[in-house]
Length: 110
Image (tube, rainbow, N blue to C red; front, side, top):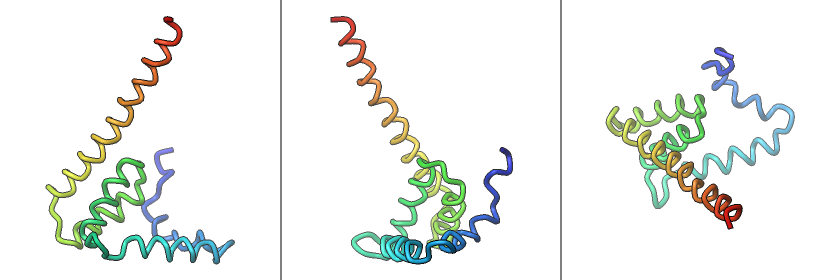
C-alpha cells in the first residue's frame, strides 16, 4: 500500500476522460470555473483548496495546491495555518458527532 499513491499519477489525471470525454470535459469546465477569481481571489481559492485537500486527505490535491500556494507567493506559515484550520474543522466535525452518541445513550437510558 506504500506506493498506492504515486506522484507521477497526478500528471495522468487527464486520462480519466478517456472513456467518457464529455463528462470529463464538463467536470473540468466546472472545476476550472470554480477556481477562477471572483469574489475570492485565486490566492484565496488556492489556500482554501489546500485546506480541503488536507481534510479529504488527498495526496494528489495536497501536492497540487501546495505548489499552487507557492506560485501565489504564500509562505510555509500560510500553508501551515491553512492545514491547522482544516484539521481543526475535521476534528470539530468528529467531536460534534459525539452528541449523536449522547443522544443514543439518552434513548437507551430512558
